[in-house]
Length: 166
Image (tube, rainbow, N blue to C red; front, side, top):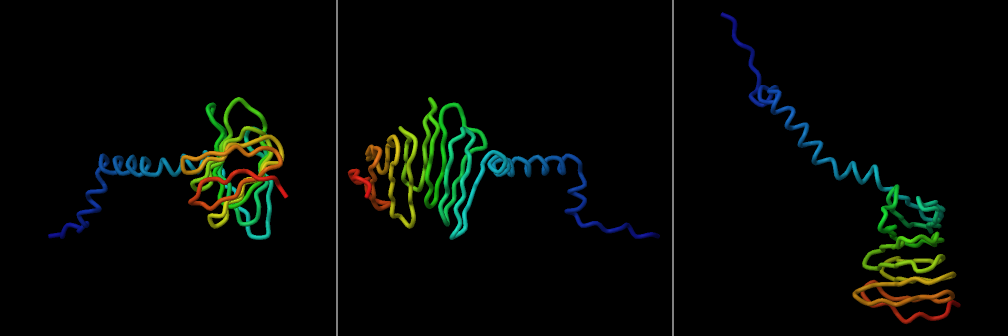
């Protein structure tokens, strides 16, 4: 008499078509958010000692400073243009009817003009405007910074009253 070949029970269970298909569907569903973000989000990092200029989908430009990271969608949505910043970058924003917002930690900068610098290293924040104006929001407090002004503050404080650029 020939002994039947032995297959572990888990392998026999996986050979069932319904179970195999279900597992594939579950894996795809679990990976979907990651795949969506990686296909729809661009992340640009600079090494220390390096700067890089990036053209955004709306033709605005961002000059990313050393040791910084900027993330943005491959295509901006109709209702807003949103960028995430860690570190420092200079923005030259093209005018459009949709708001342009930079999120950096708890800091949110809404563009009301066109050219400005955002610096957020180790919780020391500075927003300096060279052209136009921006609205700086943090902890339910907001301040408008106009051309030739800057505001500086700590990550856990409210934005300081703008002062002239030196």
